[in-house]
Amino acid sequence: MSKRTSASSNGGPSKADAASEPSYNKQKDLLGSTTGHFSLLRALHMADYITELNGACGILSVFSSLRYCLGDPSDKSNLYLALAFLPFGLFFDFMDGRVARWRKKSSMMGQELDSLADLISFGLAPACVAFSIGLRTSLDHVCLTAFVLCGLTRLARFNVTAANIPKDASGKASYFEGTPIPTTLGLDALMTWWVSQDRILGAVPGGVWFAGSALEVHPVAFLFVIHGCLMCSKSLHVPKP
Image (cartoon, rainbow, N blue to C red):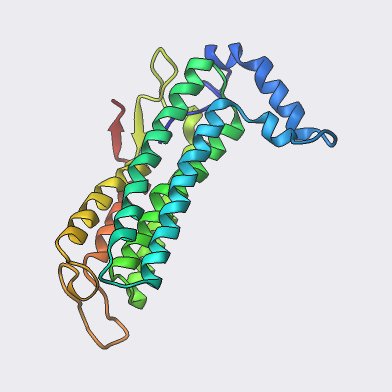
């Protein structure tokens, strides 16, 4: 998750923000304008368009997962495609922050766009892949829903508390509060391996617990719950590279 904040650790504007204040005011004027064509598109910065590409990767991953569910289960090309879009989402998530700092243009809108795109690419999209490969019982759905909601809550908390996290001389936060949501790529890598080994659908690793009952669940679904809890942790501080 790139750090595109618009306030320093003491709540005041940072040096980068001070330099970008004219562009920030221009963006506010364009967003608040009631006249003019394409004012929203003109209000977006270059970094914001890169963030949109992050979101696009997540959306395309979701569509690829749906296409697999509607097609021949033996044809795994759409599954691989769904998984392949997610590292590209991480690339764009990394680049938007770099571009924002390079151009010294950051804004609250960019921060919100970043969080929403992350939720799609690193929350919803992996959950859809998990459903596609076989986590389809009612309790599986509860676990995957909890995972996505943990990501949603973690991103909302970041937007609220980012200004209070200690920062280094460059204005970047010194640590992550809880694991950042892009770490779900670890689960994506694991699912890619399962797909390559044909451990999907009826052959999901770990099998099924309580088969045929209302409590039927794939134990691997709890990996998503555990990861969600790590994202929401308040006491877990992950140093930033």
